[in-house]
Length: 228
Image 1 (cartoon, rainbow, N blue to C red):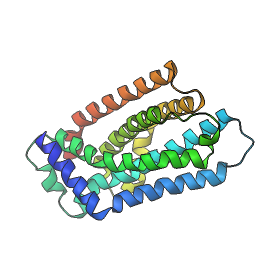
Image 2 (image 1 turned 180 degrees about the horizontal axis):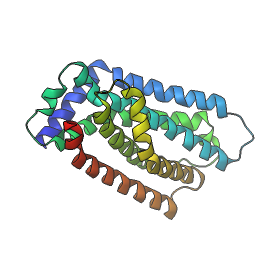
Image 3 (image 1 turned 90 degrees about the vertical axis):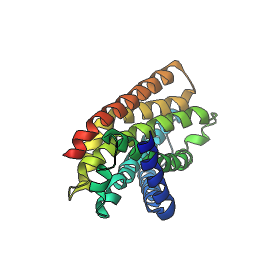
Image 4 (image 1 turned 135 degrees about the horizontal axis):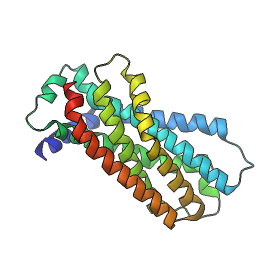
């Protein structure tokens, strides 16, 4: 726990001082939303179609933003020549992964808190006459961001020493994140069209199980990935 807290606190301090990762992630998510809004915007859709379109665009933006944010998880040590010292830090290597994950999560959650309402307004999903279930959407966003961050942070450790890591990380991570993308889009669409239901609870339960399994598996596999 001490290693996890130390690594996470160090990353959060760096993020708070430089803000480059946070700004880059927020800018990228906003750019994706804007491009999708311009390409897919327009009237003539039913409220259900509008909700599905908004959910797909929002979670596409957040998935891509998670890859951008996770690239910096280990790259900052690699660029400073301190990656070997980080891996030599006393304690289990799995704790380094969990510390990095906790360092990546808060900026991504902040980006999600901005992206979700902006995306709903941009695509008109918040103007369908239905009450927006913000609490349930916040839970969905928290579980979705955790799933994205856990997968991209792990693959960030694998690709950190590769020249083409910016291209390889999404290519490796996104196939693994397909279940999380499907669950978040489905849950968000159902919440926007009908509010809380048993089907929403099923999707969120599946998403929570995916998050837990990904975190556990990545923690167990991280020592082998770090040594490689």
